[in-house]
Image (cartoon, rainbow, N blue to C red; front, top):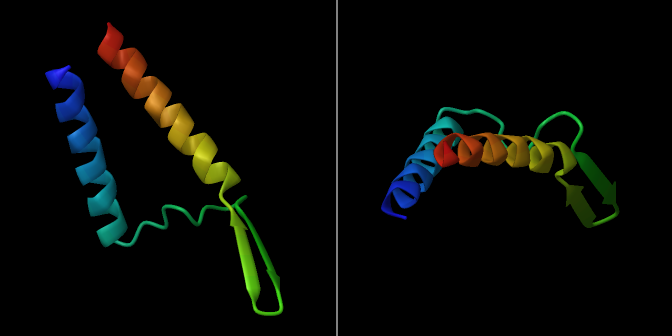
Length: 64
């Protein structure tokens, strides 16, 4: 359990560093933005798929 928490913390720190460096996490091509009038709705479909794949690979690596 401790190993998993350390890995999660490192992953969160790396994502934070990438965001600080200007990587557009959360605004990937394929994400849907709907604007009409004063309303904006954002559907991060591609971002969710990428996050799911990365999380699956990290957890599969940790189980070995």
